[in-house]
Length: 575
Image (cartoon, rainbow, N blue to C red; front, top):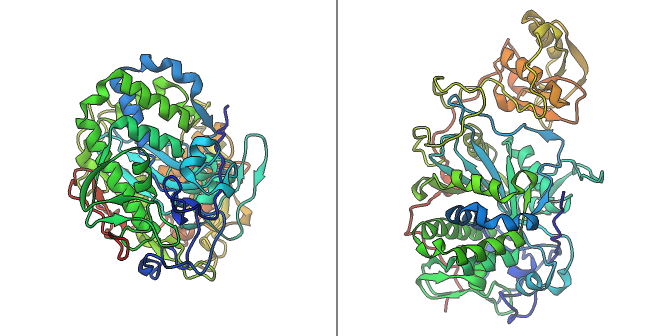
C-alpha cells in the first residue's frame, strides 16, 4: 500500500503580494470569533486580536475529482492505463467502528458514499508557492475541505454534505497500518485535524463516528491539483453581487479580485475563489463553503456542455494532473475502477445534484469562540436522509437507473421500501460468504447502554437481563446479559470478525433493527447487543420519527441547475 506523501502546516501569513494571497486565508491565522457573529463585521484593515497556530484556510472543492473521472470515461479508460502506477493510495478507515459498506435496496441497487477531502499540504515547490506560509512547509496537513458525496442507489440523484472546517468533534481512536495508535480524544478537536491522526483513513473514521453513514471510498487532493485541473477544464463561471477584493490592509485574504457579475475563473484565480473567506458573505468559514458549492455546481454544468474535454490531449492533461495530486483508498487504485465509478456518477443530471452544509450552531464552550458544532436535530436529519437514501432536494427517487448493477442474490421483484422503514440487516461479510447459523447456535452478549451517550439518562436497571430473555424466546438460547455496560443513543449490534457478520445480522433482523445498527468493531470480542436509550422499555426499540423528505433550510441547499447563484460580498471588501 502506498502512503500519501502530502504534508503541510500553516500559521502566520506571508506578505500581501505572495502568490494566491498570503494572509489568514493562506496561513490559517484565526481572528477572534472566526466564523462567529462578530467575524462578519470585520472590515478591511481590522487586525485579529487572537492568533491561532496550525490553522488552514485553504478552501477548494474536491469535486474536481469527479470531473477527472468523468473526463477519463469520455476518452476510454484504456488510454490511461499507463497512469495506474502513479495512483497514490492509503487505508480507507483507521477507526475501530466498521459499518460494512453501503447496503443494497430492495431492487438490489447499492448507494455509494465518497468522502472528498482537500488537503492543505505544502510538501513540494508547487504546493509551497501556491499555499504560502513558509513556516508551515513540510509539516503535517489539515483536512480543510470535507464533503460527503452520496450517490443514490437508483442513480437518480446526488447529495453533497459539507462539514465546516471549524466544526468541533470528538475524535475516534485511529490505528495506522504500521501499528501506531492515535488514542480517542478526551475533548473536542477541530475536524480538520483528523488528517494528522494517521491520514485520510482517520478523517473517514471521524465522519462515520459522527454520522453513522458508511463511507465506501475517499478521494483527497492538494493545492497544485486544483490549479492544474482548473486550467485543463478551461474555466468555471462564478458570480459576485458586487466588485470584490479579498485583501485586508494588513495583507490577509486570498487576493481574489473580481468585478460585479459573472466571471470565468481558472488556474490560481480558481484556487483563490475556493480559498476566499474575507470578502464573501460575513467573512466566515461558512460563506467560503457556500462559494465552494457555487463553484462545484457550475463546474458540473460546464463540464457537460464543454465539448473541448472530448479532446484526448486535454483529457490526458487533466488526468495526469489529478493523478499526480490525489490520494485514494485502495478500492480505487486502478484506472478501470475510476472508470466504473465515473459511469455511475455521470447518470445524475445537474438538476438532481444538491449541495448542502451540515447544519451547525456556534459553540458555547469556553475557548471555542467562533467554532461550530453540529446542530443536533437538524444535522441528524440530514445524516439520516443520507443513511436512508432519501434525496435532499425533496423530489424523491426515480425509476431504477439503466445499467445499475444489482447486488448478488438481490430480488428485482421486491417491493420498494418506505422511507424511514428499517431495512433488514444485511452487513457486508467481507471475505466470509457463509450464511448465518441457526439462532440456537449464536452466542449473544447483551449490554445495558440505556443511559445514552454522555449519560443523558439514568440507566434502566436489569434491562440487559430483560432483553436477553427476549432473545432467548426468539430462539437465541445462548443470549446472556453482560456485566459490562455502555452508553448508546440507539440500539446497535456489534461484532468482532467478518465470520460473525451474518450472525450479527440475524440478531438484528430478529429484533427488527435496521441494517445500519450492525457494526464491526474492535471494542467487542464477539456478537454484542448494546441496548440503547431508544429501548428503555418494552419488547422493541422506540421507532424513530418519520424521516424528513427534504433537507432543512439550515442546510443551505443549492441545486445544480441554479445558474443564478451569486455570492454576497462582505462590507469593506469592494473596490
